[in-house]
Image (cartoon, rainbow, N blue to C red; front, side, top):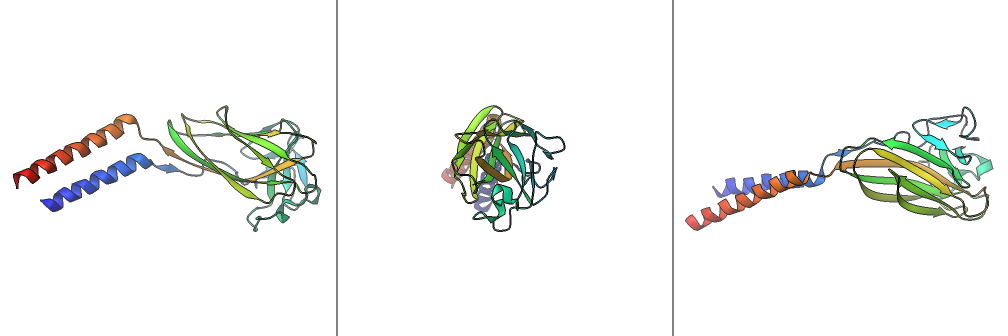
Length: 220
């Protein structure tokens, strides 16, 4: 009987754990490494405001959104910046000047906990600070800055989404137009937050199990 009771406790604890964690949904960002593009090559670049220049899976606005080859000397060779480690791929996103914007709709379930990450770096052959903001569904998640020649570094954000929405990277020019932030490796996973009634039901079951166990203990 004691063994059965312990097994029941274990099952209930496992249920609570599953309800709390949800089921992770990976790969919700398309072309987060910006490798699927048109209009450029690994040594070149193009502005998405020009015909034929685009990143697959993303929409862009403004005159300063750039498809940049990782080996492009015109942009200070992004692949030579610190922490690139050969994982950069052949292309990066450039956010130059003010008003450059790239966006993608993330398809999410209602009440999703989203874990978002990406890498940024700073253009080495043009001095000064460049900043950009990250938005989801019109809400600003944070503002970030890159210094000239800054090594690649990772950022991570967690937020709760009520459903699908638009993920955006928006440039904020603080000086010279040519200051540029490089972006790469955008990834996200989502786990559905348990509904209150489901969690309440599991807690009730746990309470009943505890009461039953206490009564059996008194009966011994």
